[in-house]
Image 1 (cartoon, helix red, strand yellow):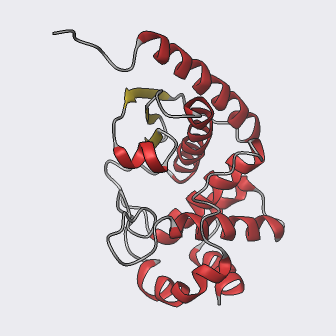
Image 2 (image 1 turned 120 degrees about the horizontal axis):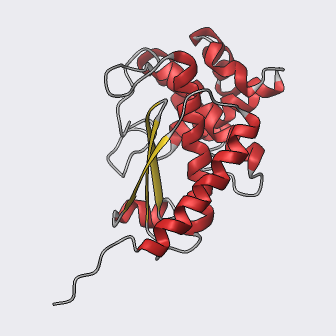
Image 3 (image 1 turned 30 degrees about the horizontal axis):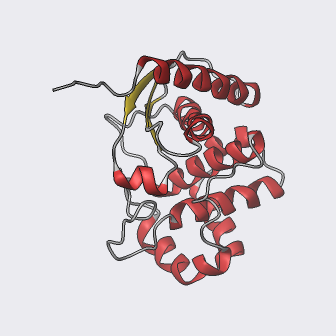
Length: 216
């Protein structure tokens, strides 16, 4: 029997360099105070390979990001950089609000602002690589769900993976709905004169006002 290890050392080095590039570009937009630890691992998750370009990430708190990748998937290098910027946005947001996924809850209305920041940060840095889940649903697609989201979802705790965001044909909300909703709300806030660095200071009423304008 031959034993192979994944990722190979060469892939780890490639991923590290891509992560460094993504972090540098993100920090040029949103400077960060705290240092970052990055956990890098291989994934064979079918959903990640088929639907997320072979890369997934999770910012657990302001100083730790986990990134998993599969270098057999097309465009994995580009997706490592995009995911790095996305997760950097989460870590920056959590730094500003003092959040830690390991021991604190995050209400959905605040997570909407969090994802509004991450996805619009990606678009600002990589305008040709906007994440497909951000563009999956239009405002018209979201309209039938907005009243239920406003009444039932905004004040509950975010869970990982949350069915408003990732729903793998399990009924309820269409997959990626929360991402598209957050992206559009973020765009609207930017059009109203807010900057990305303002998002951690916004409140539930700002989310509701934007949502009513877009989806009401």
